[in-house]
Image (cartoon, rainbow, N blue to C red; front, side, top):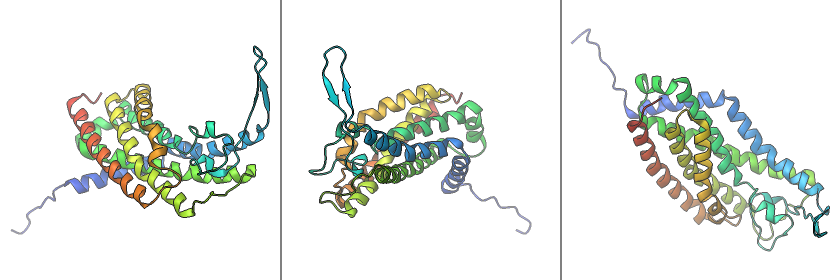
Length: 268
């Protein structure tokens, strides 16, 4: 019939694409995003240089008179993981304060990014006119994954810059550049596990950013110590294959729970 008006269904794919486009634009215009990535770049530089400068310094316990000698890093890749048969200088600190901190650092971005949606009333308006709860959760998970991946890459670059400034060795102690690349890829593939946890806690806390941060950091710490075992510096293709599977499973399961939380609770 001529003159008839046809309406195109606003299907899931188009809703998700629209939601994701908005979130990516908001992320790229957000100071928070650039601050978190900049911190991931600068922290390994400052930490490596400062510890290298303190190498050999002696501190004395005023009560017992016991002397402690500060041992600084000897290898650039200590910021990334433990080298097989590598130097032990500063390993006690770098065992925790290494590239895996990016997994916890992305919690700050996600919690503040999502809480701002609820605090400003943007989320309530969004669910009314643009997207459904499922698309919202998927979009936030993907945006958090992008931020987390960039933080890991920035941390790797910062580690190499810090090692160069401090004059540390770049010897891989029998490993190859391929192991290093696969280690980074495995960590990036594992990021959705943590991102999905942070998104779940954030949509439950809504505008309470402090509660989202406390819950996310607490939940993330339950898995934090396993990251170095799952994504070692000696990573192989097997690690790269298994980590995405775990990331997809966690993102799907916790994403479904996040959607249920949004549907069962008030948006204020």
